[in-house]
Figure: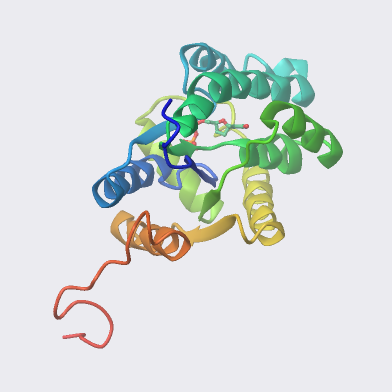
Length: 233
Ligand code: TYD
């Protein structure tokens, strides 16, 4: 770790199933690398480290489900603790930009709002798991659950739905409402991005949000001649 490293930047992506997070994370990572010249680390939850990926495989198979929602939340927390200590904190200390596919808002939404765990319990768990770590920016990809589930199923190419994809539409509607409520409660940290249009349009919205937030990381794109508003053919 170098003492003159710039402060690390921690950006999380959240949203329901099939919102296109992984595509968008890869695109934003490339844009940030090019524009800032800084190290960009992409990772995901549950997972991100070898041990946490083992817990991920068990969680998505539904191994923790019979133990009930609290035990399941604890298993997500166990994976998160390993991920934070061994990947996220060291990368931030090096001055990297860390882009993470899901983080603690997923626990609030999936185990809390949709899964039925009391908000106080979720908040306590978050406090002990995260310590003082918080995302600097959270991009919430928002999509009607019918569209997201259809995308997730077509992506699975005949594979059976995982533990959470298999939940009913009501569950996924509660999830969407939960993510929107998180954004409304923490507008400084969160941006809701409409994930309904195609990947290029969603990418443009994400870039806009990131450059408005930190132009030093991603300068506003200068439109090419003839491109953009007022130049429609
Ligand atoms: P994944 O295949 O990564 O889903 P997606 O592509 O939609 O991101 O699987 C992760 C699943 O785990 C997803 O259904 C959300 C769920 N999850 C929780 O329930 N709680 C959590 O804290 C996290 C991080 C994920």
